[in-house]
Structure formats: C-alpha cells, structure tokens
Length: 162
View 1 (cartoon, helix red, strand yellow):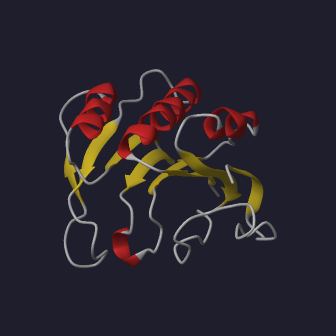
View 2 (tube, helix red, strand yellow):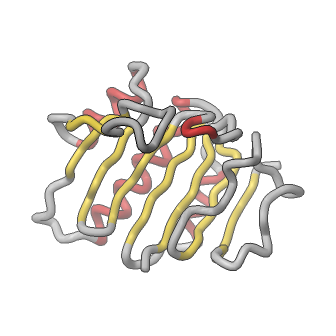
C-alpha cells in the first residue's frame, strides 16, 4: 500500500519547487544505486486511447528544467519501485481542476512537516497526504478550506491556502 502526496499548483512555475522537494525526499529514502526512469506526458485527454508517456533521456533535473521552460504537458519520474512523481496539467483527463496536479507516491510515508514546507511555496493551492490513492478532487475546479474533503477515509493530513 502506497502513501500519496497530492499537491495543487496554480502555475507551471509554481509546480517546480514542490516537484524538486518531493524528488529530493524520494531520493534520500531510496537506495543510492537506484536509477530514475524519466518520462514526459504525451496525452492528457484520454487515459485509454494511446500511450501516455514518452521516455526522456537525461537527468531528473534536466526533465524538471524542460518542464519549467517548455510546453511539455507533464512528467513522470520513477525514483524506485513504488516511488514516483507525476505532474498533470490543469483540466486533464476530464478533470475540472484548474491547477497543475503533482502526485508523489512512496511505499514508506511522507513526513507531515512537508505539508507546511509545500503550502508555503508561492502558488500552491493545496497539499494533502493520503493512503493508497490520491484524493478524489477531480470534480472541484479549485480546492479551498470549505470544499476540501476533510472527512475522507484515505486522508492522513492536508493544508490549503484559502
């Protein structure tokens, strides 16, 4: 069973710092010899229609820079078995969410103090830790204190910026 970090960023630029933070945390908990598998998102409209990712040759830092400076749809960084980061664009796969969604999963746990670091980054709407899957937020166009599913059975902890 995985533990998921779910982050909503208001812009591509505001997504970069949380992506790097999650990468650093996952790398520190993974074996040093584990190599990352890197991919770019190629399709954000239909999960079943075509291949979603294309391989990216380079380092994780190069992929994050590419994401920050180009119009690639999103990315995936597989750090180790059951440890990864995915970044999805706003309103992808039929979602109503108007934010960049950063999903980090680990087979260990996320330290709740990460939520405070993440929510303090500029442009972050929400950050949540849940068990097994990301929170069901796809029907919300944005997340705030009033509409967040605080009673969801998978929720461990969360922070919102409004």
